[in-house]
Image (tube, rainbow, N blue to C red; front, side):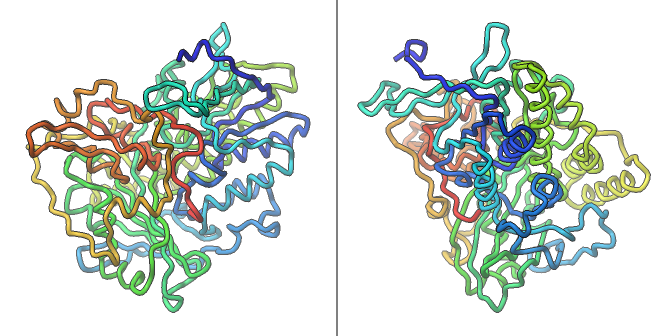
Length: 553
């Protein structure tokens, strides 16, 4: 079957938005606020809006206040739990040291923020968008970018449905559609597969540092009501990552209905290929201070996603002929605050205003340099510049010294407008991985089934599902690399960095190893696309509607 010979229907819109997360929804709402006559559609690869959304989350409402000022009184679920209490702990193996908030820069305060499900916020925003006339298509993945003869983006093509693993059409085959737009907004989230292609085609990263990432793994627990403190926010650093010269942090947020959201972020620039982010998270939950909160509770959900950590110096050129990048496709996460939803939404607002003005002037498929300029003169830039050296300082100097230096840099930038160093550079996470013979394997404890769990059982709590008879969406550029390079040199890190057990080396004991890809387990976190030391794995969109189905995450 040749993609070029398939007859496809086309649907024209003023604006096509790829991704139904905070940035995409904010873009759509703002477009219709500025010009109700604009035709706007959102493509969302999840089975519903929110199905693929995972975050802590503690949300700064700054952008939401700009977009929908009455959200607190309008039934928004985020309004239910304002932050009431803010703790930061430095963990040792068995103890904790509270870090006084007086020594932290003001931007680290969570006063005025809210904690809740980002997925539920997106579901609410989707309702607001639909009330304004936005068309939302869940269960349809954008698979290809469409270009005109001049090379400008003119829309996207949705993925074909009903294709077998052999690439041939099945009886229920349904060809993807061409969604054509005067402008296309890419809001795919971190490491979007179409965004990767756009960055390469238009050389969008020519003047910035490479993006770097962390892997965030999250669980939702119902806990004993007697231990629940609505609005309490706890962040930790130190143990257990301090034992493997790795860095990251963790959170535990007391949200509505006697639930806590807890998660663990491991920076993906770790050198030791034996580091196992999933198992580090399981260990963290057994720390006495965390265990005490969870005791008597029950896990109800699990998931994972990659997080942009590059900061301001990794923000690429944002506009190209016919389209723009917004949200985590561009990389606006404030790493020390562990927040990116507010900056994502603001970028969507700015994209919408630039697009509406362009269409109003009669333009289409042009390069919206005014959007790029608007972002770089907005509070997004101001906020991210204050913290732009936090990640690279910790990455270079480690969790203890690096944190002190990062704090000093943020204070100086806040008070005096300059830091202890000029903006620092990044190295890709894949390039940081070292040979396995330089390290000893890490013996992780077996799961107890109460606080810690095995990986495959955990994946069942993400409610992930893919049609099994479809092409594998985790593509090996060279099928010989896993057993020729990754296994003998790096001890097969795919089997550890994936939080869903997708990659498994079989036949090792028999002397005939091969990499087995369990694609149906994939939670769409993109870690493999990021961390594979040979950059041999490419994540592409599977059939629409597949993947996790996160409730209340």
